[in-house]
Amino acid sequence: MLRLGGAARLLTGADLPALRPLLERDPVAHCFVASRVEAAGLDPWRLGAELWGYGGSRLEAACFAGANLVPVGDAPAALSAFADRARRQGRRCSSIVGPAHAVARLWERLEPHWGPAREVRASQPLLATSVPPVVEGDPRVRRVSIAELDILVPACVAMFTEEVGTSPLGNDNGAAYRARVRDLVLAGRAFARIENGRVLFKAELGAVSVRACQIQGVWVDPEHRGRGLGTVGTAAVVAEALRSVAPTVSLYVNDYNLPARRAYERVGLGNVGTFASVLF
Image 1 (cartoon, rainbow, N blue to C red):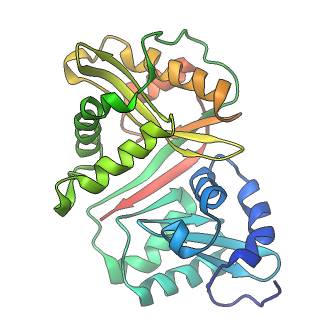
Image 2: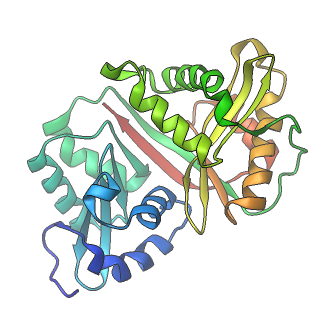
């Protein structure tokens, strides 16, 4: 579909051939957007978001605009166009997240209109591996069954609240968040070590594309921290994800979370880039 650049535009199904090469430039960094597009296409109703593009038959950049604002590509003119569209639309997202350079440029243009942010995490190492972990995974970490949903949800809430600084339960008494966790369990993307009805370690595959998947929500019960459960638990998830989900496994971590970074290094996850998050 040939159009001239200049302003951000809403992508449609006809733009899929132009979008795919853009996503494939960096399958790890663009895993989230690729996973959503592969699952739902570009129809906003199915996608639960809009996907904006900049450029004609050869897209220069794109931007996922839903619960999160996620840039794909960092062409300056494109980021300015995305920021202009986001500013006119008004803030509907809870965060801006993605490659650090692109997020910084978006936020520079949006901060005068959307600021101040609740928190800006400007440097989050993006880690990945395509080979099995260098440490043996915890054999007690496994996929969570739907019968264990009520055991898993409180651990997910605790992780989210600790990591993000706000509760995910919202005004619906947690119904929407519980449904999201349930979907991950049913898809076989929630992993945990559960003993005596208690979650000791957990993690999920928050995004899964053909080329890569992304681990999220890594959490260890506070009473069991410092015993290496995070390292061997993550190793178990990485090993199974490589075996049955995608050829590359990734995650991103806050730069100040040194214990987690050391654990991921021991697993064999190497730095492949830098993410940033602006939280509202």
